[in-house]
Image 1: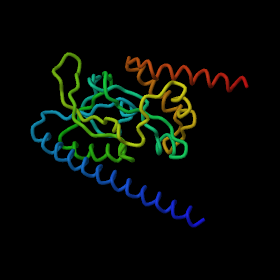
Image 2: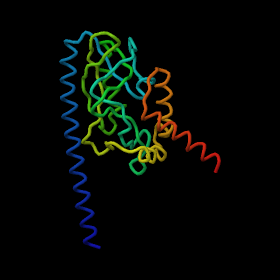
Image 3: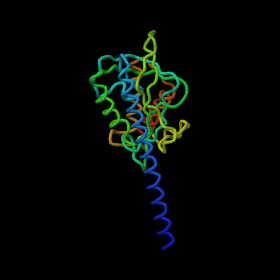
Image 4: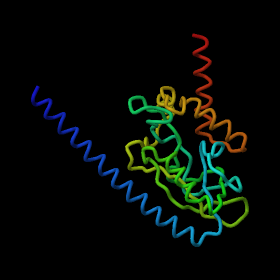
Length: 223
């Protein structure tokens, strides 16, 4: 009994140390990004934010312009274990992130300079509950125009909530069990696909999961 208790205390201490490392790293990342944003704000003519998931139809901030956009070098993927919005730590769901490689069609929002800092603060509160994303400034394409710099949220591949590349059946198991403060994971996937369709954006991975959700729903009604 004493040995088991001692082992549990050592594991608890190790977890606390790891948590402190992540908190310190995330604080440094936030400070570094804040310096970059402040510097960029002094030279940028326009301020853009790139959305690839729920941000596309539910931005939650004031904007001057909304445009279809293309981001190169990252792709939309269900690669984030959701512990808050669409799941719990015990029963995680699966939500979208921007993972390395490929490209992603999404929506860009132009924000006024006066609202830039407040918008970033809002996005951090919304997107960075567990600090699973990395804030970055990347070029995006708006139609045939020259590239514009935009704020994007990229998945942090070193974060424990990064799932990596999962197979369809693995994804489905997390999606079906996911329930969080913002609702169910199946509803999240369905809403994403339906909004992408309205925008004329086809995402083959999400369409395959949508079809599988339809089959699961049909089977549940016939049981």
